[in-house]
Image (tube, rainbow, N blue to C red; front, side, top):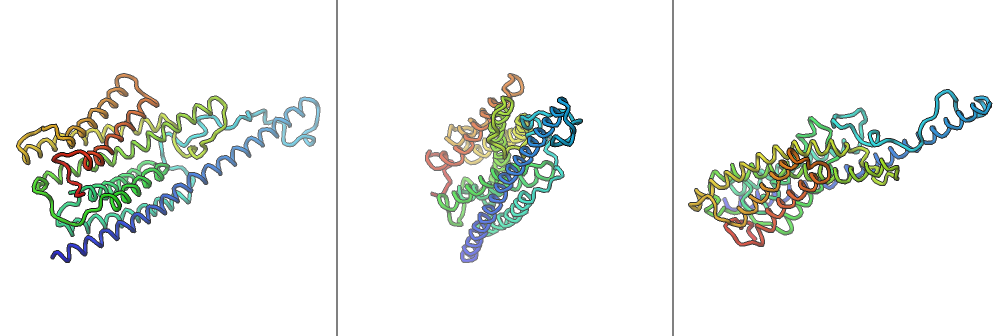
Amino acid sequence: MPAINETLGQYSELFMLLAAGTYTIAFLAFLWDLAKSSKTLRAVDLKAAAGSTTQKVAVAAGRIGLGASDAAGPADRGERPTSGPTVAESTAAGDMKYAGARRAAARVGVALTVLGVLIHGAGVVTRALGAGRVPWGNMYEFLTTGAFVAVAVFLVALIRRDLRFLGTFVVGLAIVMLVAASVAFWTPVGHLVPALQSYWLIIHVSIAVLASALFTLTFAMSALQLLQSYRQKNLAAGRTDNLAFLRVVPNALSLENLSYRINTVAFVGWTFTLMFGAIWAEKAWGRFWGWDPKEVWTFVIWVVYAGYLHARATRGWTGTRAAWLSIVGYACVVINFTLVNTVFNGLHSYSGL
């Protein structure tokens, strides 16, 4: 039996490697989509500006008595502005519905991401079979499972919304998590410490993984919101559009609104994570709260996101301030699952390092 478990663990590592490779190609496809869209839309803008200039010449020629044949273009269409697209015209649809454009590179990226998540899922399942338990008992397993759930949530969200612009960020984060798991936190298949041998592991950690996956999506949206807000201010001021790839991304307000709704759901999940963790602590150690570093940081995350939701809903903290609060919250999530598990001594140091 130990030999079979070890073999399944090796298969799991192979699947993880293949998944990381597939995600890398998908990442490049999403990146190419953004670059290609930027180039295509810039060419459209230049063509529109050239056509507008031609029409202005035609109008001026008509005013001074020249014939239509003496000017480039008809003179009866009137003048159009030559300053390029407005802010509203320079972003994707705010409702994030699928448009008519196919965007072949993005479709390839989605297809490869689906393939990658299937391979990734096989890696998670074989790890679970090899360990004979749920595969999130140490840092290696949490990172690999967390990356799987983050990508899966992204793909599920694609069913209702055109969030392909997030592909570069979500798949990129998944690659970072898989590489970190394999290089820095690799742990052989083994049994859990006694405190983790409980059904509360399934309840508590599964909700934490799902909430963290949602926080990953909102982190990407908040980062894009900051970039889009900066770009929109430049466009409104008539400056050059140096971030043209954001043309395929909705405006900052739409990103903020969707991020707020997803953070609300994730916050509920994190609340249950905190509650169930306290119940599990009482079952394992005989107390609900002991100021363990992991418990403290879990509460810190809850406070930051509670502050974010409260400030945005009642204090008018919108725009870039709300985005920065969301990013700070995700930074706390990252610290909680990396530094707290590996640097601070506590009852939750189960990384296996």
